[in-house]
Each structure stands twice: as C-alpha cells, then as structure tokens.
Length: 588
Image (cartoon, rainbow, N blue to C red; front, side):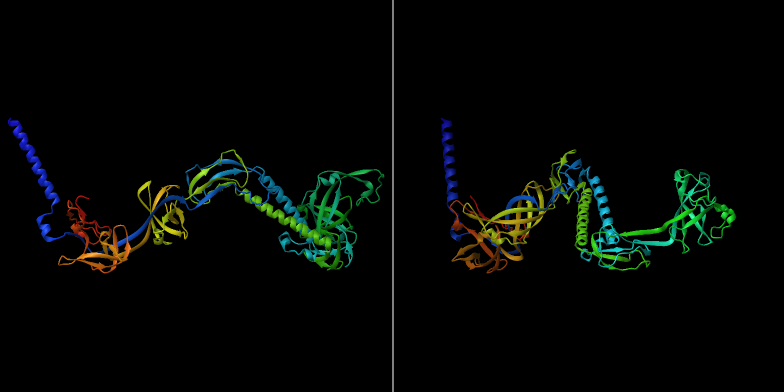
C-alpha cells in the first residue's frame, strides 16, 4: 500500500514540474513584457575587406618542348641521312632535366663518308672554276658570268707564244699563250754509272756554254736512282768528240735535274757541258770556282725549260673580246691576258656556279646533322614521356618524347554571369592545390572570355589564369583559384545580417542611445560573404541591429555574442578578417 502511495506522489511531482518548465519556456519573462523587444546589435567598425571569386580547375604546363630526332625538314637529298641509330637513351619518364642536357646519343654510319665525298667534289669544282676564271678560289662568289671569262697570268714572267687576236674565235683547250719566268732555268744531265756514284742531291755544279766563256753555277735538285738505257745516237760526247757508236747501241745512263739562275742569256735548247763539284772542294759557293776541282761529265746536256712557266688555255668555246698584253711583255701573277665572251662561256660559268652553291648548301646540311648526333633538352623541365630504345633505327625528324616545366602553369576555370563582372584581366590570383594542403601559389588572370556558354540555364564564362608553379606540381592536379575582385583598407564595415532593401535602396536599422531603433539609408561598396563596406550613411561606433525578439518564436530568446568585426580586438572576436559573427537566437 505504501509503495503505491509513493509512486503516485512521484508521478504527480513529474507532471507538475514539466508543466512549470513548459510555462516558463512559452511565456516571456515579466520584465521583457514590460520593457518591449530586445535587440541584437553590432558596432560599425573600421577594417579591411577583400572580395574574391572562387573557381576550380586543373593545372597544365604553360611551356613544353618536344624531343625530336634532327633532320626531316625540306626535301631529301642524295647525301642526306635516311636513318639514325639510337646508341644511348640517357633519361627516363619523370626525370628532371636542364636545357642543353643530352637526352639521346645517335650514330649515322654513312654520314661521315658522304661529307668527305662531297667535300672533295666541291673543292675540285671550285678549283676548276677558279682556274677557268683566273681568280682565287676565295673570290669565286664575286664573279659576274655576264662579263665572260678573263684568262689571267698564272705566274709572274714574260708572255710568249701569244698568237690570238681580238675577234678571233677560240675553242676550249686551245693554247692562247705561255707565261715564263726566265730568271731560272732547268736542264737534265745524263751520267755514266761511274759518274753517278759521285753525285748527291744538293751538290754544286757548274755549266759551260759554247755561247759564252764564263761558268754558271747550278744545283742538283733531283737524282733518279733508276738507270735508263739511251740510244747512242742521242748522246753527245763532250770528252771524246767524234766517238764511234753503232746505230743500234744503247748506253746505260742515270739522270739528274739541275737548276740555275739565268744571267739573262740562257734559252731553252742551248747546249752546255756539266761539271760536278764537291762542296768541300769548292769552298764558299759564292766565290769563283777553281776549274781544277771540277769533274766534267761525259755527255752534253740541253736546257729544257725555265723553272717556272705555265701554259694558258682557252676555257670555253668563245670569242676573244680583248687582248691585254703583247708578245714578250712582262706581267705579274693575276694580270689579265685575254678576255673571252659568248653565250657558251656565260652558261658554263653560271652552271658551274649553281653546282658549287648547291654543293655548299648540301655540305652545310650534312655538317649540321653531324653536329646533331646528340639530342638535347630544349628547356628546363621534366620528361613527360620518352619513346626510344638503344639500337633502334629511327628516321630523321621523328618526335620521340617531350619535356614540360612546372615553373609556369596554366589553369582554365569557368565562372557564372554574376562573378564574371568582378573578374578583370591582370587580377592577382591565389591558387591552392588539393594534393598540397597548406601551399599557396601566385597567379594572374590572363584572359576573360567576353562570351558565355549556356550550361543548364546558367551562363558560364571561361577565365585563363597563369600560375607561378613549383617542382612539386604535376599536370592534371585539381586546384582552386581565389581571384581577387577588389579590396579596401580602413573602411566602415557592417555585417550582412544588418542590411535589407526597401524601394531598391539598401538600408540598416541603428539602435539610438535612447533605445529606439531608426532606419537609415546607406551607400554600399565592396561586399563579401560576411561583411559589406559602407561608403556613406553610418558612423564608426554606431550600433546596427542584426535581430530582435519581435522576429522570434515564443520559445526563442536573443543570445548575446561578442562581435568579430575587424577592429574589435577587445570584444572576443578575430580582428581584421572582415567576417563578423552575428547574434543568434537560442533554439536555431
């Protein structure tokens, strides 16, 4: 019985207590009913505000370079490399490389041979044309084919055998004249086997001509060690005049070459007796020689020619338009002798010049290929991919990989038609990457599209962003761009909760010192998701109303919270971030 009574008492107490609590929650306190509505307020403060537009997209390299086998541009020539062989691959995908670093080494077995062959052909053609024009090889590119061919003196000397006259027609290869330097002459002496044993190259010799009695000094310039049989009828005996030889008899002789200064009287065909003198017997070669020390050779010798003499030939079928010299006239090397003109001469010069130019261009290409047997990186960066294997035969010009750099990246994002009005070209951008928390990269807007694309009824505008990246970035990484749309410092700020609009005019309610609210119009500036800049209509320190008990349900109460508007460092908030924490109603 007692237990039932106790249980009934407990139940009654719970019911009465719950009812009283419900009454207190639903009925406002007596003092509130007496004092009117209670307001939540924030002070108008000074601070800084930043406005930004956020967008997401992927990162891609702004700069990249191809890894390419040299050659392959322009038409192929007969000497061009048809294929390279990959000798070494020095990098792998993902390797960091520097500009100029060797990535591949190649070989071209036939390239060196082709260069040598073409070089020899080019030099031969240049020498031929220079000889034909009578100019140095270095001046070939300055000649004028329309001016024809000018035959020039190949050496300094006298002109001999000049028979051509102006207006005469010449054929290619016809002798025009000879130019001889008669200051030195040459002759061949024939020696018996016994005489040959006493001669050496460089020995001093003397010559005695029948035309004048003085001796002329000479030098042995060449000694032929091979014996040569000569018919006796061709030998003139200087020591045994009138010697009898059978007609078919041959004499074994050794030939030596002599050269001597011409005193001015010696001519080709003149006969002389040759004597050999050992240097130790002759003493000073500049002095007169004592004939008692001369060993005279058995056979006479004849002057064959002057040491320096050259024949001038016609270089083409042409007409002699001008003869510049006369017979026996002294000329210097390079002096004009005869000029030739005619269609055949002009065409021949032009054809040969064209051949030389083509060969030079081809040789330059081949040498360039020879210098490019190492494939190098065109830029600093990271190897994106490499498609090459050692021993692989590969054609010129083929792309086998690429290098990219993460120091400069690009980001393409899209913003809606409201945010695009806040984005301007050149605006700074802060870029964060999902894969690199805590890292921020600097960027800049490089382009804002002026035409949007409809996406599910919303106009989207493309924005291009240049990003100053780093080595930890990779193409394709997802990133978020915070595009600066404006900022202001030391301006009046109010929370967005305090702003409302009437008749198209932004307004706020301020709580006057007497506790009476008042509606005032304001001019707003920059605005982000928490606060707005007030340009006019308010003063620093005024209280703006962010809520009141009139707006609450019977079960709600105004909960007082400290503000975190910029500038309220001593009110429990976080100063300077432009993000207030408005008063909230209990029960929300």
